[in-house]
Amino acid sequence: MPLRVWLYVLAWSAASALVMMSGTVERLEVCQNKHCRKRGGATTLKRLQELAPATVSVEIADMSHTEHGCFDECTMGPNVRVNGAPQTDEGRVVNGVKTEDDARRVLQLLA
Ligand code: FES
Image (tube, rainbow, N blue to C red; front, side, top):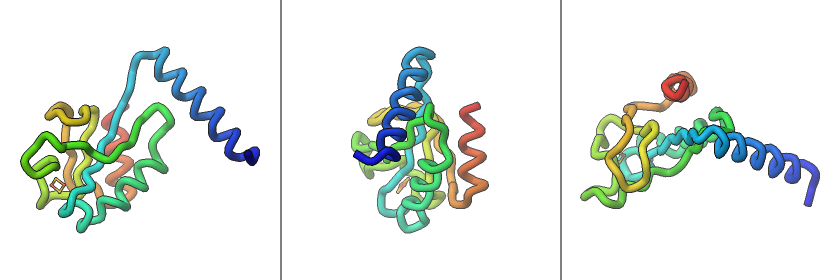
């Protein structure tokens, strides 16, 4: 395995250990359903994955428990939920997260 991959695994493990020790798991979930994807949801997901610190989990939203499989705020996407949990209605949904500035504002909500 190349050195770069080993370093990445080591950094990821250290960050995971810190999260476990602090008991704090922060989560961002990005809607990848039809309407949010049309509005740039895939770019939003990638951007947040790149910008988020290792202590923040950035995931594809799992809203399979809802009728439409999303946050049902489709016309205002791309939508990102802050500190929710998969298949629940917990957390805060932020609408229109398109630009890098938008992504940084979402990350500030975690601070
Ligand atoms: S498609 Fe994203 S909230 Fe409905």
